[in-house]
Structure formats: C-alpha cells, structure tokens
Amino acid sequence: MRNRQATQLLSELSHAGRRGAEFPPSDVPDWPLEDLIPAEFHTAAPPALPELAEPDVVRHFVNLSTLNMSVDTHFYPLGSCTMKYNPKRNERLSNLPGIVDLHPHQPAGQIQGMLQLLFEMQEILAEISGLPAVSLQPAAGAHGELTALFVAAAYFRDRNEHRTKVIFPASAHGTNPASAAMAGFECIELKGTVSANGAADDRGGFVDLEELKRHVDDKTAVFMVTNPNTLGLFEKEIAAAAKIVHDAGGLVYIDGANMNAIMGITRPGDFGGDMMHYNVHKTFTGPHGAGGPGSGPICVRDFLADYLPGPVVRARESSSDEQRYELATPAKTIGRVRSFFGNVGILVRGYCYLRTLGAAGVRSAAELAILNANYLKELLSDILPSAHGEHCLHEFVASADKLAKERGISAMDIAKRLLDHGFHPPTVYFPLVVPHAMMFEPTETESKATLDAFSEAIHKIVAEDGDLLHTAPHTAPISRPEEVNATRKPVLTWPIGG
Ligand SMILES: Cc1ncc(COP(=O)(O)O)c(C=O)c1O
Image 1 (cartoon, rainbow, N blue to C red):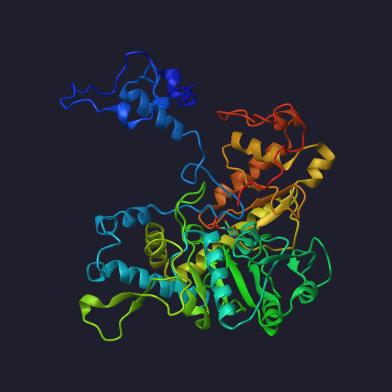
Image 2: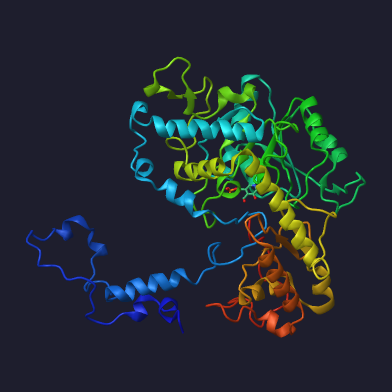
C-alpha cells in the first residue's frame, strides 16, 4: 500500500482541474503555431496531460525511486558488475563548486587544478597497471576496449603489418568480441579450457595454451583476455600466453574490468599485457549500472603512446607555478574518442577514492574483496557448489544445476525469491559455460554479518516449497510477468548482470 502512488501511472492519478502552479495570463502575443508546426500535427483538442498537484507528483516520483533495489538500500552481489558501496564523500567532493562550475573550454591557465587532478589520475592508473601511457578519454569499459583496438590497428598500419585477427577465450565478456568486430577485426574464440594443473578439461576455466598456439599466427593482432577471468580465477599461465602472442608479433590486451581483485597486488604490465582498460565506475567506485555514466581509461606500453587519443595531460618541464600542466596531442593520435578529457565527474570520484585509500588501502581493498568472495563461496558450498577451483578471487560462479535436476529449482527461482528476502540477486546464467550459473561478487564493502545473513536467506530459500519459488517474487511491485505459472526453465536465455 505504501507505494500505491508510485505503481499507478500519473495519468491514473490525474484529477480534472488540479494544478501545481497557476500562471498569469500571457502578455505576449500568441505564437503563430500554425506557421511553426506542420498542419498534420495539429489536433482539435489539446493533449490529455495528467492534471496533478505538486505533492502528487513529488510523492509519485519519490515513491517510484524506492521500488528499485540499489547498493544504498540492499546487499547487491551482482557478479561481474562490482556493485560495491560508493562512499558518499566521493560524491560530495566531486560536486564541489570549484569542480562542477568549470567549463572544459576554459583556457588551460584557468583550470590548472583540474589538470593537476587528471595528470595525477593518469600517473596513479599507470602505476597500478604497470603500463606507462594513459588516455582518460574512453567513457566506459567497452569504449576503452574499442579505443585500444583502434590504437593497435594504427600501430600495425604504421608498421605495414596486415593483422586481422583478435583472439579471446570463450568465457570473455560479450563486449570483447563486440569491440573487436566494431574495430574491423575477425573474432576468433578459443574453445575449451584447462584445469589448474594444465590438463584439458572443459570445466577447468583457464585458457588452454595449446589451443591458443593453434590459433596464433602472423595475422594475429591482439589476444584479449580478462584477468582475473570471468569465472573469478586468476589466469596463472598468463605470462606464457602473452609470450606465445608476442613471439608471433601480436599484442596482448588485458580487460581490466576485474582489477578489483588484483589492484596493488600484481599488474597487467608485469604479466605481459601491452594495453588494458579500467572500469573506474566499478573498481574505484562510482554510480554504476543501467547505462549510467562510466569511465574506461586505457593504459598502454610506451611504444603505443603516440597513438593514444588526445588530449592527454602533461606536466611541463620548466614552468611557472601558474602553468604547470598542459594539454597535449600524441604525435600519431587516432583522434578523439570523446569530447574534452573524458567523463571527468567519474574520474574525480575515482581520484578521491584512490587518494583516500592510498597504495596500502588499494591493496587491502582487493584482499578484502577476495576474502569476502571466498567466505561466501564456502558458506554456500553445500547447496550451490562452485563450478571451478578450490579458491576464487573477487567473485565465484556457483551452479544450481544439481538443485534444478533433483528438485526442479532453477537459478532464476532462487534469484527471484532473494528479492522477497531483501537481497539483490547475483548475476545468473552468465558465464554461459556453466549450467544454471549463479555468479556472486560480494565486494570488499560488505560485513561478515551481511554475508552470513545472505547465506542464511539462500539456505532458507532452497528449503522452501517449489511452487513458492517458481512464482517469486511475491513482495516486489511486479512479479515475473512472462514467467508466472510458466515452465521452470527461465524464459530469459541471455545473461543477466554484467
Ligand atoms: C569483464 C568485463 N569487460 C568489459 C566490461 C564492459 O564495461 P562497461 O560496462 O563499462 O562498458 C565489463 C562490465 O562490467 C566486464 O565485466
């Protein structure tokens, strides 16, 4: 009942004659609408807009905003998405007037503070990645992938090398092949995986080096690999994989979307990566999801620096204190990929996060993320066994396959019922290589008490009556419109989460 006003449409709440504001009669002549709007769009009567008082409208939207689950209201272990809590200080700092009132067209001399912040952000990202040259321009992780592939293409073009292939493992995030295809490359998927001891095993979860060798040749431009991978496992043979690619003259791209697990511990540049992107909105906190603002800076080795999109921020060697930082365009730049300097609002949040934690704090955030994921994995192991490996990094993929086969309870049933128990579900049915996959990423910002309560809820759920689960959620504003009373198989076949 609390949210009735939100679940009704504004047109249903409308009462003829209600107003939020009254305007005095206009004292300027009417616009000649007939001249401005083509005749076919004229209507006999004005459109039936909802008529409401201001409180009706405010209550409608405020109540509507409470219907959704968010990181600020609920535990949100959506695997692969890193839905960690965003400290409010970063929001406040990024909204300071000295930051939000800047205009990107102001001359460099007037925005030295912002340029210093962006320069230091470049330096920090370079240090964490082990790759020295940085572009802050890409507006999201996928955009970073695409940008780096353009950089790779420009580099090979410059060397007169006709390389056409981008290779990635089957567990890759969908954006990897999408970016490769958009950049004009042929996509090659590595089938099969190996287990931790290197034995061929389709459920092993690691890149199969023999399979990689079979595909790498003088047409290979880039090997794209996420490390830790989408199963929450660190690719232990990553340096050997990188050597295979480098020996054939190709480049190694590390999808850094999972940097949350390794930041401050190991670096893509040290284990063979030539290029990578960050998801600042995931790893260093920022509002994330639903197409919200993102930031996907890329870091590359020195020999690729000249191809980066401009502008980049440089510190001037000999400069007065007033003009220490300047904007520069790399010599063989691929051009701009976004306006101005990137998504500065998110970069400022990430900078505040990194400065607050410092080097030791960054490492400890990664360690806590790993600890939390392993703790939750252990708590759930009796009912949702993990598909791969004994230990995970920041996330793990469990499988509801046994429950589905023995009791007809699907991953979707558990996910939907979790909403009734006050938890956001994990990512389900992704990665596609695990049947009834449930991908949990608790992140470092959650307490042991929250993880215990979550595990308790899942244990309660799997002990509940099957029919109650197939028709869940029961307390959410809407249920499963497509699925109530339907099959126990999920209607959705694409992965949810990301
Ligand atoms: C492994 C991986 N790569 C790439 C991306 C794409 O990042 P974005 O959503 O910022 O485009 C994601 C998204 O979470 C991801 O998990």
